[in-house]
Length: 333
Image (tube, rainbow, N blue to C red):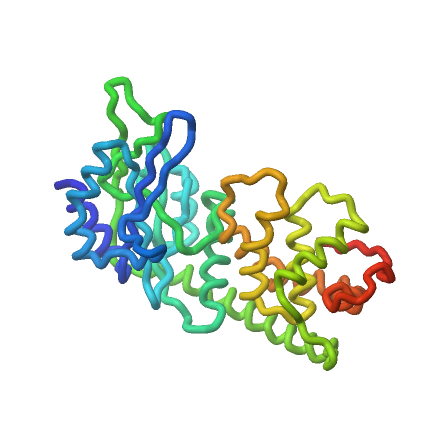
């Protein structure tokens, strides 16, 4: 069975602890139906290699009824970095630049995906570092929109059943496993160490900044209430054309007022959809992560310094004092 043989070669090369299997059916109107094979009670742990092999007949039945099959490698102590939407030229450039993929796939004729395996550094910045290196490498070589470290890719041996790839005979191209070797990428590891140092230095700066601007009498309140209070304040002073920019402004204000990254991310995820007039199919969890990455990252550090004179006003907004006294402001991003 080609699909099983390819999985064994792939899994030996990637060396992940577990593999999530996602099935996506492409509808005629352009829509998608997605489900995760092991998801129970809203949770997915993925399959061990042996468990996935046991589910292979089921996955083949899903393919036969029109599903696209995807794998997501998951490990506690390793990153599996996907670089998507590579051309033949950009794949060659990636390798010439010293990056060593464990796996290379031809996901459709002339389009490629590859996976780099590297150890996690075991610091508090592991998730951010993984997301950041994924974003950097995809911006340079692959899909400029891809920024999440944990990301599905097409399963080798299965068919790419996108309607645009349907052949005249009614068949579809196979996802080809072009290369598979059990190895880690030294150059990517060096890059993660540099990114981790950047995050550590930024965290030290934020600590020093917090001491500089410390206000003992101020304590952040309910994050959702803070979100809507800042939104109301912004609406009074700006014509809102870009809600993403508004969310970034609110996230930065909440960070300045002492809310944790986790609180800001969860608040953006829960509240941002409620202020849009039209609901979209946006992945709000990833949106919240990206917004928090801005507010708590180097760009947020820069904008906090630039807008330091507004900190007292931001605290006033949140403490529910008379906001009519607050003068107008603008925040650069």
